[in-house]
Structure formats: C-alpha cells, structure tokens
Length: 282
Image 1 (cartoon, rainbow, N blue to C red):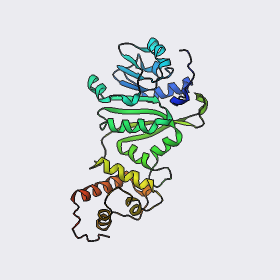
Image 2: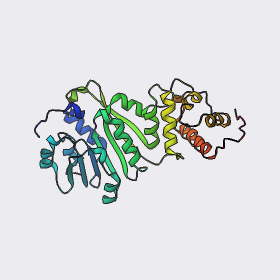
Image 3: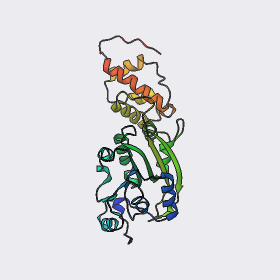
Image 4: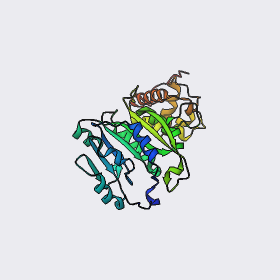
C-alpha cells in the first residue's frame, strides 16, 4: 500500500514494525467466528491480518486519503472499510447483526484516548455488546489504567477502567516502531469487559464522586467530597451520618470502596430530608 504522509491534526503515528503487528495479532488470538471493529486502519498493518481470517471486520479510517487503497486491498463480503469516525460506531447494531459480542482493536490517536475508552465503557453492556478491546496507547496512560490503590498513578482512569473491565498491560512498544517517531513509549493494553462485582446504584453519582475527589487528591475524602455539586447542608449531614472513613485520601480507596461510598451517598440523597435530625455515627 502506498505510504501516505501522517497528519498531525489527526494524531497519526503509523505503526511500521511488522514484528509488533504480528505480536498484537498474537495477543488477540482471532478465530473464524470473531467480529472485529478496528480503530484507525491507517496503512492496514493490522487490517491485513484480520480482513480474511475472521467472520467480519469493520475497519474505521477517518483519513480519506487511505480509503481507496484500503478498500482495494481488503474490502470483501466479510471486511468493510468505513471512512467514518470510530466514535460514531454503533456497537449494539453489530452485536445484534452477528449475534455475538464484538471485539475491538486499534492503534488509537493518543489525543482522544479518553474519549475512545469512555465510549467503550458506555457501550460494552457488561461484555454482552463488546467482549474485549486491545489498544495501543501512551505508556503513562496504560500505567494509570492498571494502577492499584495506594499508588501515585492510581486515579480516575484506574477506577473507571477496573470497574468495567479486567485490564492488562501486555507489552510496551518503542517509538522507533512508528512513523513519525512519537516522543513517548507506547503500550498495548487489553480490556476484557464483564459484569461489575458490585453494581453501582447511580452511575452519575459514582462518576461525580470519583472525578471530584481525585480532582482534589491532596485533600482527605471529607474535604474532597465537599466539592460535589450538592447542597452544602445535606453533605454536612451525610458526613455526620456515615460510618465511612472520611480521613483517608482518594488513592487509598479500592474500586469496591468507591462503589460502596457512592451507593451510600445515593441512598442518602434519595432519602434526605432537610428537617431531620442527624446523629453522628463517627
């Protein structure tokens, strides 16, 4: 396939190392019945290994300069090339059409990593729509995703990723494997979607709690929670009533504890009466 110069505006760093491409495919272990969605087909480094070896491949590529060559080389009844933004993908339609959860793979634009991840989290439906995703990203982002509690890299992305998925950092990739050469090392992370071990009662409150306290991660939990967009008096009553330890810092809470905290706050918000007397549980 003729080489197309990368566009900085699209965050393009093309994988040029065949050994790395084969290693990624090896981690996928694709089988004939798989349905794959590829993010950013580019020059087809991964596309060529999937297009004729799985039940169906839908490869997304937003750069119009590559579409004709990609379609000529790989398009068939079992492989389609879409000149569309992956963020518009309708995963549930693919899962319904083929009666199986889809799999996702891609060397993703690093400037929209969070957008892609949160779309996958929202659409996976506990693994019934998306079974897994294997993605290339900056190594520092990958380390945040898999970080355990009590570590400096544990934060918002860690909690959300590990709530929705089992996450594994598989291997790192040198900048020398790309053109243009990025300034950072990359990493392959695999996300296996599943049902959460504990259900969140209200996902909006869960997200608000996690984002707010990590936004004030140097503060103890009580002080961080006070920045939530809820009535100040109500939060004061919640602090008095809860038996949850509020003097720890956000990075000291496990995913399970974040869920328990947000669920307790959800119940309190739903049942709170401004006129009730609150007796401290601490």
